[in-house]
Length: 277
Image (cartoon, helix red, strand yellow):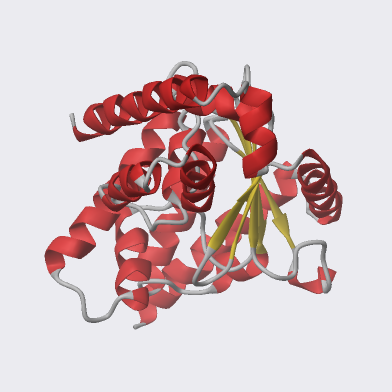
């Protein structure tokens, strides 16, 4: 219900944007050029399909001289999301993506996490928060995984660095369960996971995680994330560079069969460790 209300609010945002743009006598391309996005994106904002980032909303206010209404509305909707401010737009987009390609250098991606793994990483990053906060974050993260269960689920390709397999998040037993979960999804052919071995050394995305998303009727996007921030990229030239980086990661990774064997071997190692502790 909350998600439906947020979507209704974004649709209102888009309708208001169209009204104010037309009142100002600007085409979508005109407004796009002034706020540094394409006219196509302005159209997607107006349809409620894409959600503008806060800096774009601010520029729209400046161009249309609306007294900050778009910035305030955008901020309110972002604040109502259970996700970090820099990630909420990504969560909305992945729900309509036809293909998602992800590189995870240190942590298992949210779409593959078990509840215990998600809980552990949430508390590690937020050691002084309430239990209610932790439960909200974990529930939102696990809920995102519904897109992989849907009949129209996107193709989901993941390159996991071996570091993400070897770090015992939550302890050996929890990590064994996490790797078993990934292996099960691979065997069910819901995801295609390959592993980038440690001995590969330097690789094409050394400074953080990378995600590429493709859509039926929208241009592709790239998303990069470090420990404290994330950036959604939709400039075609930048997205093309990100796609090339992901191609290089896939070439350096093990085959799906060898990756599955490594994941299952790592799970067994953790199980043995759990039995001896």
